[in-house]
Length: 189
Image 1 (cartoon, rainbow, N blue to C red):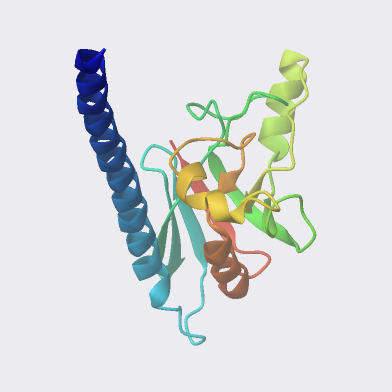
Image 2: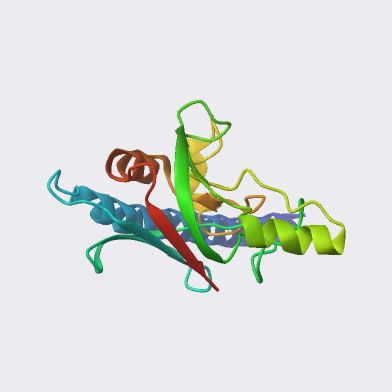
């Protein structure tokens, strides 16, 4: 019996060390991600800068705010669960590709604030009609789902939307403040 107690203590000590190192790794990775995100949002966009275009690169998972062709700010984004390719129909969980307009803001959305993208345009509607399908719609740039903003450090590491473009809540606050209704948005693969 004493042999099993000694072995049990030996393994339980190693088990605790492994658990401790695992937790330290997770906390460190989270802290690094938080610091990177915090450093991106520390420099606010001056009121004198006019954002005249939003550029989204789906393959790079970035949203860029531009003023006169110059990048003012870049944000890491999450997309739909099926991000590759142009949105074809309702429920395909894709983000459209092309040139659109940010046509209205929603302060009371199911996510933390949102700006609507004018998908589907006339071309998207005609293509869907020729295929006999519903093109879908309600594509937005938005923050985290209401009540889950504290999980952005996890959510933004994966694609989780139904085809929208997601950022953190603080980033959405900044985007809402500087992007006007009517601003062009270009989304590329």
